[in-house]
Image (cartoon, rainbow, N blue to C red; front, top):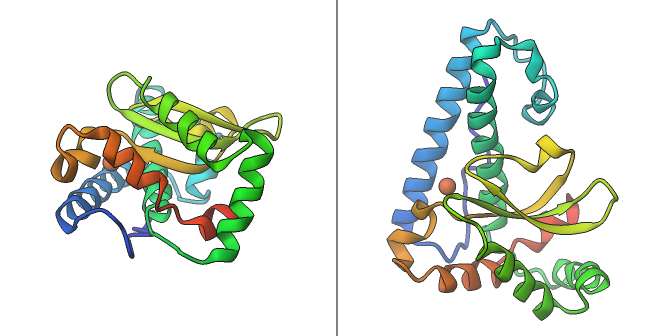
Length: 192
Ligand SMILES: [Fe+2]
């Protein structure tokens, strides 16, 4: 079975109650994923990321559900790592250097990230990814879709399901996005 990972969220701007619900949801996604895989006699030989490209080994009727829960688990694991604030200056400057190459300035990157995330209709995530041309790009994906499905490597995942901001920010999604972008785990992004 796949085990619970990255459940320790340190120094986050999020409140305990929001984190509690996030973890609860994540654990339920993981449980459902494991149940579906066991039902398909899967031997857990691949990592969760690898499993994305092996989806055709499963019963046709279960593939969509497996991808749904697998995406939910992968996206949340990345999100939990990213919202663990890390104030190490070295990684912050490394991050800025990479961002400036593509987005001119950190401010510009934040504006573009916000602009794109505001275009997401319904539930989903906004990601900073390394795309198939090895370039940084900001994309939205609906519900629990994962960038790995398209061969992209996600560096940042921002949860935009209502449960991610409603408890603390109510309908002030803008403030949630600002806090998210101002408290990234730069070390995790750089090392990825
Ligand atoms: Fe979530």
